[in-house]
Length: 112
Image 1 (cartoon, rainbow, N blue to C red):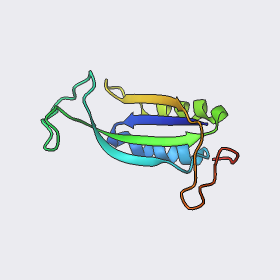
Image 2: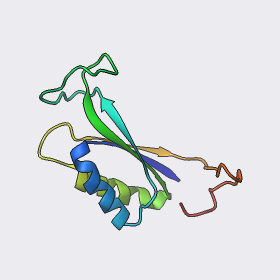
Image 3: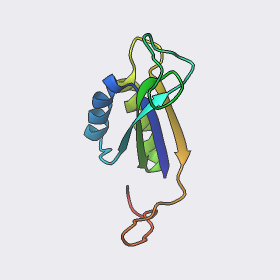
Image 4: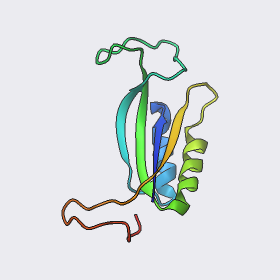
């Protein structure tokens, strides 16, 4: 299994979610976040919550089968890209296993 973690600009997230859903990626987690990457957006301001310059992003996380990961990445790239710099970043990680909280059952043998 693979985890795809993407940091995407808020104005592109709806498009990314819809494209992923349309292509069979139904389960994902979204979180609001602030980035401090190399690119600083025009009008970036000090955060009230953190003492750094912020760049608002949405963190999207999904877990899929190994053979589905590249498709998810391609969909995020196609739908998250803008003509401007600082569109975000995607990380890909191996997931050894996952467990259902209710039953403690391993999901490794099931399709996610």
